[in-house]
Image 1 (cartoon, helix red, strand yellow):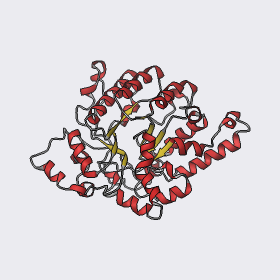
Image 2 (cartoon, rainbow, N blue to C red; image 1 turned 90 degrees about the vertical axis):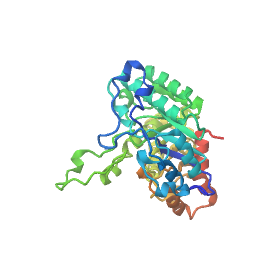
Image 3 (cartoon, helix red, strand yellow; image 1 turned 90 degrees about the horizontal axis):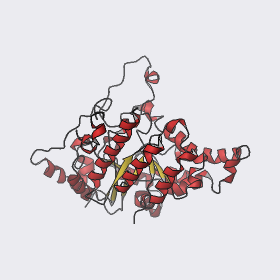
Image 4 (tube, one colour; image 1 turned 30 degrees about the vertical axis):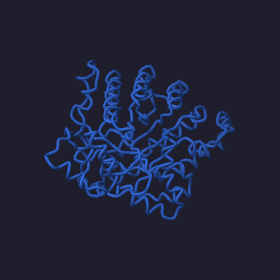
Length: 377
């Protein structure tokens, strides 16, 4: 028996945990010494090489289908650092495929020197590709941005040639302009041609609400350790940059111009999605008179989203309600393995939320929506 039981599951969000030489082992000599250290800071996570004492691996494997419920998180988890272990973990989880993000590399988006930033993306992408190379079930995620297309397109092409299956972007106005600027069309066309989605993952924008909003005259809350450190106030706004970025992309007609382009927002919840799609539909209907470009849309934004965009709900969100409020095709299962934010039993929590829905809707949520979006057989 596996954790998945009899379900077919495509896990749309999991992570590796970086080791001390994750970037430097894969960086070009010209930028190697300029790369920033990973870990520490707000995460307070210290990188390890994944070494285990005798018997530790066997003890984790012995957990069997309880690996998620009872196993350790972060670097200590089975397969967090060692790709051979990750294959064993997948056997125990029973997932058909698992999308793999890095954990501590989001700060690379904020590097100000473009030579170093794009060099860091290359190093990151090579490291992720190497981690995933030996197991076709592992689908690695590249990093890139749209700030400088002359630099970005070669990085993108290398990532695609490495076999990476998604491209993680920052949710900022790239180069001081809209992500839907027509000059970015070659980037979107390349992704559409290769069938590789773009994604905004938590870390694409600021994680925190801002220190001024935390100052309430009381002692600060006790910190905890993790790759994505957010508190209750951060949680209320963490998806705002993604909604702004994605809304602008839709209103600028990128999904209409590139019908084969797919995109997603990962690990930022999905409770906000139905309202965003309604606002987009209203925006097009109302402003198409004063903004004639909107009148050329052959599909409403909500129709575009159902065909081309996907979102991962948190395990505590009511997926049945989301499916009632919007197209069930929009939503994907994710475990967040081996991060603590994924919880101890994401399948159990999602099963309870899906209990009132038809089995076919649950099957789409757990596997079919992601498989079609990712272009899997």
